Image (cartoon, rainbow, N blue to C red):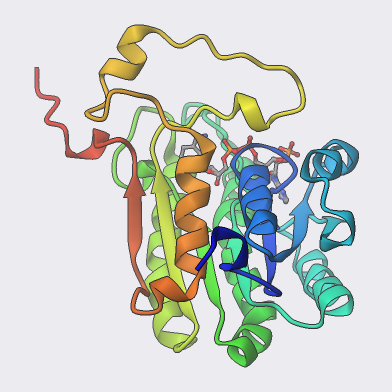
Length: 253
Ligand code: NDP
């Protein structure tokens, strides 16, 4: 099958698709023939994101806070209104609040959990009926921080570990809809931003990875595409780690 036909006439929702890994996923899906609804909190990303995607009527931008149930329900309805069905839901939006725990408010903790974890529940809840109709797929973007930590990452790490559990629970509840998650390692997203940010990477940044380089958004987007395609029809409930081997590396000094 040629690459452009892998998701022909499918419809995908991508949260946080205005920039970064989410925008790269949206681009990849459009190239594979899908229609894409971007659910993005930052409405100012509408023009630059749609310009970058250059997909005529096949990409729709919805200003949507994924931590808000009404907004998620409205975005699902928008996808149905535009494209008539939903074949794939990719929950990629996330935030972090890396304050020391003594300074992290309960409200701040909940904001991270709402955006990163509860949104996965809301998307599954509101898209379930449509995903069942198409025997579709859902991919949740977690993180290797679900498995390992630096100090002051409690809310982010807990939210991402929660997504891993949510993934296998949903895989049982929504079967035969397939639900998987991906845990990226360090991914430099400069090439999919709109602000000209350039990250200076040292030789050591690359060399510390067993594969010899830092990750790229395409490393994640390609796996999302595969997991949402028929080629992955025997894979569900899994957490796929894409980190250049870093979580397999012994680091005792
Ligand atoms: P970015 O921060 O570059 O992009 C995330 C996007 O999500 C932003 O456009 C952001 O909008 C949007 N967003 C934030 N909150 C909401 C919300 N409530 N509703 C809708 N959209 C929202 O992230 P990356 O591209 O770097 O990462 C994408 C995913 O990959 C995330 O889940 C992240 O945790 C995960 N990941 C990334 C790694 C990396 O090294 N880059 C490593 C491991 C995991 P706004 O501009 O308003 O913030």
